[in-house]
Picture 1 (cartoon, rainbow, N blue to C red):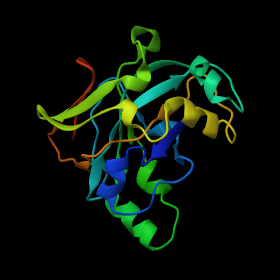
Picture 2 (picture 1 turned 90 degrees about the vertical axis):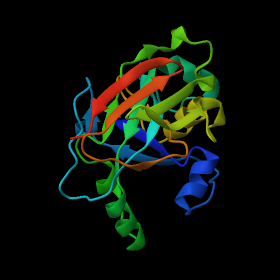
Picture 3 (picture 1 turned 60 degrees about the horizontal axis):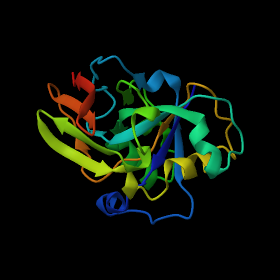
Length: 204
């Protein structure tokens, strides 16, 4: 399986980062399967970074093989949704970008893709209108609605499937809203879709 992720998919987030512009197409990056962190396991801050940031987002699970998928058919290719955290070594990312180097190491390290419990999409009337939020130590730090995405889930699938064959079990991280920030040892992260808690783990 592979993890496909979208950068800057909410307009205010672009301003928060203070770099780049809104592109015609989604900005895509990848994470390896070793990045998956699940089942409520703790996230251990790695030794190579002093600035690990959380980025909460909706994650959809691909359920069938597909290539060059039209957006009008994209809904057939995912069956479940959850909340995930795209962990980023921000200090490494800033250095790599400043030097004009690829920044995969800052995004794709082990356990950098936390995922919660998946919920069948049929449980919701419209997943492109879902509200989600992230709490740290019982205080909400990020919240938004999927309706505010610059590129919808179906649009993203149409775009990425031009380049990658989607396979059963692949995950699509759909982008994070404003509110990103650093994590510290001992913090308790909980992610929700609507009022249902799907993600729950600690920083170690």
